[in-house]
Structure formats: structure tokens, C-alpha cells
Image: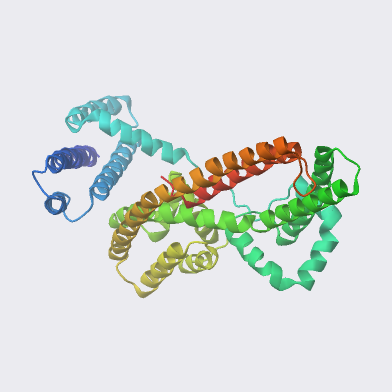
Length: 433
């Protein structure tokens, strides 16, 4: 018994020494990388020389990958220390043994400050927080009050239109499935129709009050604008799942390189493939792929599918082409008995390179977006209102509308909507940080 406890204590001391090594590796890489960047700024070395030095320093890996790998090894060693301490404590049935083993453990902890105890405690806190996160409950569809009201008024019409024009709604059904919205397709069609009808009624009343006239022209203009606004709501809701699907695709694409790096580090420790997905899901750090990983885990744990089948099912519905290719490659590697670690390392390098190129392209496109904003949303409205001021001085109207009505609609409707569309566009194009 005493011999086993001594081996456990020796294992703790060995783990602490290894933690010290990995911590020093991180510190040295950060320090030398900063020194090399200073030399590059002072033009003492070239960019190619910097890359060569960094490649030798990180043993062929990037700086971020090297640091992430060493931190993951530190977390694994902390887990081993926790396990050994748990075994020691559980084996102490007598008070004398507790005191004796506690003193031995205190002696083992003396070397911990050498490994920068504050740094290790920070990583240990991260690890403990991750353990507290639980896998969310599985949800297939969710009923909403607005959906019930929409079905009450529009269910028959939505069923009729879906049966009559299936080709028109098929693209929306596919986007709805990949967007992650937990609503039945029939209910969503009812919500689109009901929202369009409400928008028509409210917009007609609003524009009629804005025109403040009982003339035939005012009524016709109100009807036309109400139809336009209702069609706008219909189109916006119809393509809303597609927008969400594209947004999910963008988030998955931005998180995927770091997820693969994380999986490669876990696979290097010899863990089972399903453990990689459980670890990513419980970490809560990769919100972009969390929904897809949740599906994989639920297929395995709730529905009893094997991992290969679960990966194939998720690959069929995921909106990200990159994630689909990654899952299919993972299935091939698992089923053929290939080297999972080698596959993950290769995909990690490829994904990181693509991520950097996409970042550079986005930075280059920001200047174009700023020019568009200045021209369309700043200069154009100024010219428009200057023209309205001239028309008001000269007297007259545009399409039967007074200058005041046009100014009100432009100020409180058109310009805010244009700004909202621009912000949505920039938000869609912007990669996640």
C-alpha cells in the first residue's frame, strides 16, 4: 500500500516537472518571437528569415499552434495530478495515514512554485470551469405562441401553397433545415403569410395617416406602398433561413481551424474519437460548431448510432462545405483504420492557412465598403434633401406627393432602412474574431 502511494507521489512530482518544461517552452517561444519581430521592425532580418527562425523555434508549427499544444499538455498533466490526488485521498482510511500522506504530498507540492504556480492555477481554473459546463438538452422542434396564431389563420393556405408550388418552397425548406431554426416548415410558411398580411394592414394605415388626405391618389399610393412593404416582409422572412444558414456557415468556417487544432491535440493523447467531440462540446469555446457537434453527440448517445453514421448524417445537413469535407474525411480515416492524428494535423495546417488568407482578403475589402457607405448613405441623402429644398422653394410635388411627405418618409423610413441593410451586409461579410 505504502509502495503504491509512493509511486503516485512520484508521478505527481514527475507531472509537475513536465509542466515546468512545457511552461518554459511557452515563455521562451513568446520571448524569442517578440525579439525576432523587433529585429524585423528594425530591418535587421527579413521576413523570410523570421519565418525560418520561427519554424525552427516551434519545430515546424505556427506560434499559436505551438502554444496551444503546450497548454493542452499542461491541462492533461493537471488532470493526471487530480486523478492521483483523488486516489491518494480515497485510500486513506485512517487519520494517521491521512496525516502521513498529506505531509508527503506537501513535500511534492514544494516543486510546484518552480513551475509558476500562478500560471498553473489559471489553467486549472479554466479546466474546472469547463467541467461545470453541461451538454444542453436535445431539441428537435419548438412550439411558439406566434407560430400557433399563424397556423390558426394561415395553416390551410400554407398547406395549399406548399402542395401547389413545391418547387417554390424547396429552397427555403433546405435553408430552414440547415439554419438550425427549431420550427416545422409548414408552421414557418404560415408565419410568413401571417406576418405579410399584418404588415400590409399596418403599413396601409401608417401611410394613409402620413399622406393625411382622403383623395383617390392618396388611397392608391397608400395601397401601393402597403403592397410593396408587405412583399418586402414576405421576401425578408422567406430568405431569413438562408441568411441564418449563411451566418452559421461563416461561424463554422471561422471556428473550424481552431476546432481541428484542438481535436489534433486531443487525438495525440490517444483519446477515443468520440471523446474529442465531447470535449469540444463541454468546453463551450466554439459556439460556431457547437450545434453540429451537439448533433453528433446526440446521435451517438441518444439514438445509439455509431460514430461513422453520426458523422455522415451531420455532414448531410451542415451548411458548411469545409466542415462537410472534414467530416467525410474523418469518416474515411476511421473506417479504413488510418492515422487519425496525422489526418487531423494535416487538416489543421490547411485550415489555418485558409483562415489567414480569408482575413487578408477581408481587410483589403474594407476600403471598398467604406467608399460605398460614404457615397450612398452620406453624399446621396445630402444631395437628395438639397434637391427637395429647391423643389419646395419653386413649388410643386413628386408623383403627387408633397415635399414634406417625401422628407418624412426619407428621413424616418428610407435612410434608416438603408443603414440597417448596410450594417447587415457588413455583419454578414465580417469574419468572426
